[in-house]
Every structure is written in C-alpha cells, then in structure tokens.
Image (cartoon, rainbow, N blue to C red; front, side, top):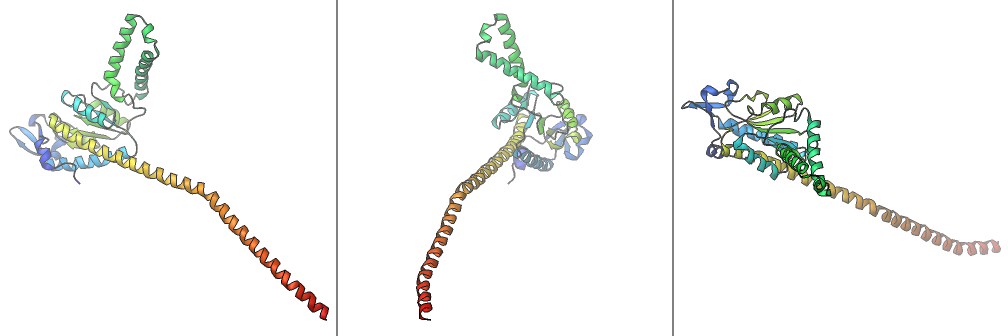
Length: 289
C-alpha cells in the first residue's frame, strides 16, 4: 500500500521549487518543467524516492537502531521535533555543533554534564550552593538542554540521518559522509543531491510539504518498530515454549522409566510363575524314571 498519493503531494505544494536562477544543475533529473521563473519538481520522481527512503528507514529501525532527525530552519524545527518525539527518536533543531558526529565522545561528555546537574538538584546539593552559583548552573543547564536535549538518550552514533534542507545542514552531511552514515533528506531545486544516499525531491521551505514528507518517514518508523516488537514477542513465546518443554522433560523421563521398570517387574513375575509350574513337573518326570 502506498504511503502517499500524487494528490497529497500536490495539495501540500511539494512540487514548488526555487527560482530558476537559483537552481543546482545536479537536480535537473528531478525537475519536471519551469513555470513563471520557478522550477516545478517531478512528483512522479518524488513518489518513487519517498517510497524507497521509507522502505530503507523502516529496515534500519526494525534492526533496533536510531535515526537522527536534523532540521534547524525556522519553519521545520517544531514540526520535526514533534514528529521525532512521537517515535522516541533523537533530533537536532537548534544548531548543529561542529563535530557532533565526528567528535561524538566530547558531545557525550556534555550530555553527561547535563545529567550531573540534574542529580545535583535531586540530592539537595544544589540548594547548598550560593545564589550566584545556582544561577550560573541553571543557565548552563538551559543552554545544554536547548542544544543537546533532543539527543540526551543517544548513547552511540545514529544509524542514519534524516535532514530537511541539505544546503543548510551541509556540516551534518559532510560529517555523515566521513563516518559512512546513510543520509535521507528532502532536497529542493537549489540543493546538491549527489552526497545524499536517499534524496527526496521536494519543497523544503513550505510547512505543509515538510510535514507531509516527515510524516511518511515517521509512518515507516512506526511500522519498523511494530514489526520489531512482534518479532520479539514471537521469540519470547518460542523461548517460553522451549523452557516449558525442558521443565516437563524430567517428568516424562521418570514416567518412561517407571513404565519400563513396571514392565521388568511384570516379566520377572511371569518368569517366576512359569518356573513354579515347570519345576514340579520336571521333578515328577525324573522320579518316574
């Protein structure tokens, strides 16, 4: 079943590109035509590419890995943050710090610092500090939360990046390239799609367009998470069945042993009875001789 339709893309304004003078020639394969000085994106290509991206991202999530959402432009940040939170995925919507991927160990230290400040407030140490020190710590906590709050639960490098506007997020793209992290992105007619593993030709400025494409990716993530949960449940059921079979096995062995022992006793009684009948007859025959 298709995750979206041509009409949905048209209604969301996904086909509107930038002015022709701002175009990137590498986007020519995704441009349908030019109208009133504006490039029109080929929505047939968009449909194909968004399906490819959704299928690939679903498999990544199904394997239990995380996808990092990156959208620092004003009209995209709130939309992307809300969608990412809904599926418990990490996100960056304020500012991309240089080295966020390539120097991830240092970023993790900053995240740890944020959690240490939280511990101070819980164990009562925070209340023993002077007013000035508390204010400084509070300001630092707010700053860290703003920049890194969306990746507070990210313990290792993400398996993939989903970006809005690759031109604006060029630092994130270059870092992902260095680390061979797959990239999924909305690329407009003024962008270079050649460095993106799964480019989705689409209007990356209109909120409706951003919301529609992001919702399709989120839908794929939900499907991946559901399938992963089902597989885990099936495995748990199999393990429980195996454990039960092992638990029942000793009783079955004892029962078989008892049955076998009973059989031996029965045969022994039969032999003894037969001997009791045969021995007197043999003795009588010997006496007659």
